[in-house]
Length: 99
Image 1 (tube, one colour):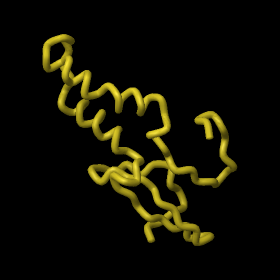
Image 2: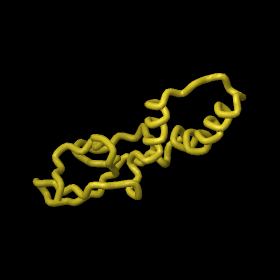
Image 3: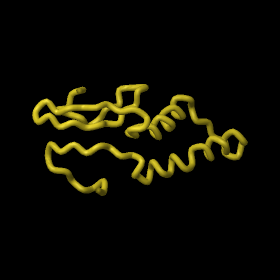
């Protein structure tokens, strides 16, 4: 499913960051960027909080990094939703409660 394709109202679609071009670019180049900065090849400084966010982005939404099992109180449907256990990052999960 492309990012531009609309879902029917009320249909939950799990966020899959690992399928996006941005995720691929960050995943494939973050360590190279850090290395170039460390070697002095690039004269920039990335603040510690920005590094943490970039690294957290690579874990966000991946079920292997943490998930919540949610259940709809209305219909009983269950879903796994990727979450970052380091912070409140459950997005787009209305009408679902932990089961």
